Image 1 (cartoon, rainbow, N blue to C red):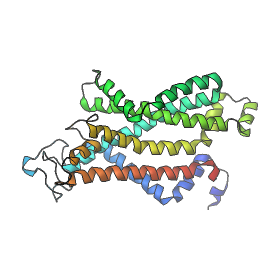
Image 2 (image 1 turned 120 degrees about the vertical axis):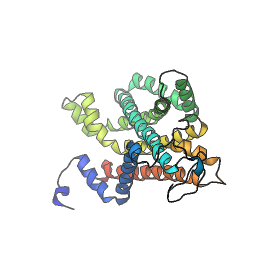
Image 3 (image 1 turned 90 degrees about the vertical axis):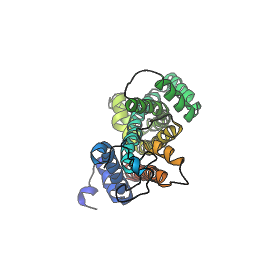
Image 4 (image 1 turned 180 degrees about the vertical axis):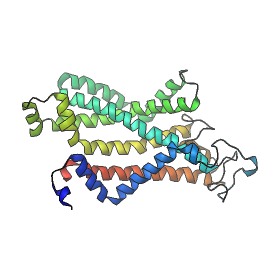
Amino acid sequence: MSSRALKGHSLWYGGWLRLKRNKVAVFSGIYICILCLIALFAYQISPYAFDEQYMDRILESPNLVHWLGTDSLGRDMLSRLIHGARMSMAVGIITAIISLIVGASYGAVAGWIGGRVDAIMMRFVDLLYSVPTLVLLILVKVVFDSMPLFTNPELKALTGMLLALSVVGWVTLARMVRGQVLQVKQLTYVESARALGASGGRIVLRHIFPNILGPIIVVLTFQIPSNILYESFLSFLGLGLQPPFSSWGVLANEGWRSLRSYPHLIISPGLALFTAMLAFNLLGDGLRDAFDPQSR
């Protein structure tokens, strides 16, 4: 290790040094970045429009013209898979960020203040936690879809999915952060910060959060693939994005109907879901090992 790495350094710099040594996590991070770029520039890189139909090429197997074949309406599967990444990745990442902000703030306030405030706040969390996840997801999604808020069907489906998954996702993070804060706030360095006159907000942000970052990252990186899977499941049930718009769940739903006759329709979205979820999980393991204070 270089002399610079042996000297005192921040949590972020030290974690970055350890993360770079984990080749699997780095490769997973690169793969996720590539997926995000594909989703961001889907209209520029897809060879065909996602809803363009070629009636003379219906249900073609993979070939040199259509690398992943075509579907029952003659649409290019590769183009639909690329556009499907926009919905799936947006739902997974944006929902996880919203859940992190809401859940971490809520849990930190409850754990730091404690007492009756903590009890009241956590009873509300327990109430949401007692409702089955899928039931709550479907309920929020159906209620949102009944409101005439958006005229763009793709934007309405995306917003409804984000809202439904955010309502479900922040609860787990809130409970975990609250438990970690209750443990850490009793440690010596927190008492020292209090004695020096640091405010509660500064202690939580500068001293407590960096030392509970490992568990937060683990929960967050497991939540992203879970959100992608939930989006796919809701789209599979017909509650997500509707054709002709595309997501990996929509493609899996369409491919499932022709599994035996035309397996290429479900293989590509299935592999996309599998590799994306695996990459997020491997990256989460690497980040946990890199930023866990006990590993330093």
